[in-house]
Image (cartoon, rainbow, N blue to C red):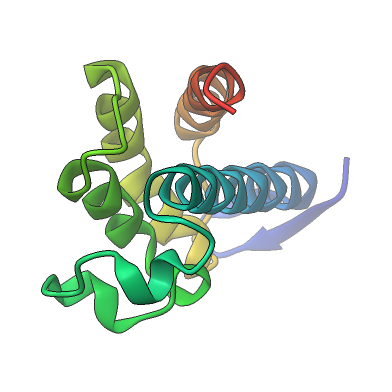
Amino acid sequence: MSKIVNVKGVICIDRMQEAYGLLYKLENSLRNYIDHQMTLYYGTNWQMTAPKNMPFRRYPLYQSYFYHLENYIHAFPCFEYPDELIKNLRKLYPIRNKIAHCHELSAEEYQILNDCYDKIMNLLIGRL
């Protein structure tokens, strides 16, 4: 494993690279799921035909912030989701921020990311 030393001690570079990869796959899979469901419900031009009176719709889906993705799931009738999906997404908010700002994840946070990744991906795969 690649490691560097900072003022707090050793940082595992491999773990952070893996964490970024998991988050990247998860976030983009969620966007693909949203696009798929919106297309089925509103048609291929859903970006123009779906209601736009929501603040998070100011951004195209593929430029939306992570927390905006949850808003799509709550706001539109084409999403049926178990509470577990939202619960796991919310567990990831502080972890995602740490990854985005290059703050090291603890072993526990990394495990939470892995667990949430597995649960969310299984839910999404079952719905596509």
